[in-house]
Length: 139
Figure (cartoon, rainbow, N blue to C red):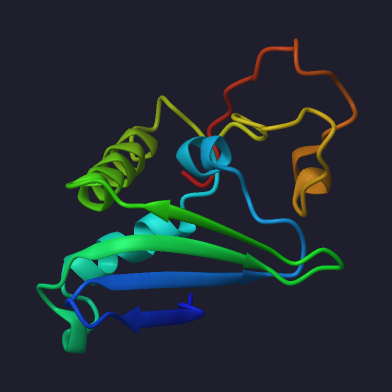
């Protein structure tokens, strides 16, 4: 992926922006579902962008460019970006366990949401109350 915009402030802090064609996510949505900017902040703090190595991310901001433009800023707490990175590493580690599997629609924000890969999951042939059936593939 690509970062939409990164600003270096006069005080040495970094602000990361993401442009949205629709409504920007709320703070709870960022905390639980939309971690893009938090992961980009971790990338900055981990030195992925050489020009910014060692600089703290002070804030992330979603800029909604729809019919009703909206700006949503979130101040970054100390260690928040790196905590998000650790959580991602832990999640990836859990999925490397063959017993876990890749359950479709595991953590939906809204059960009525339609996703790009629902047709591959055969979503709609059963409901969310049906437990997933494990199946070995590719062995």
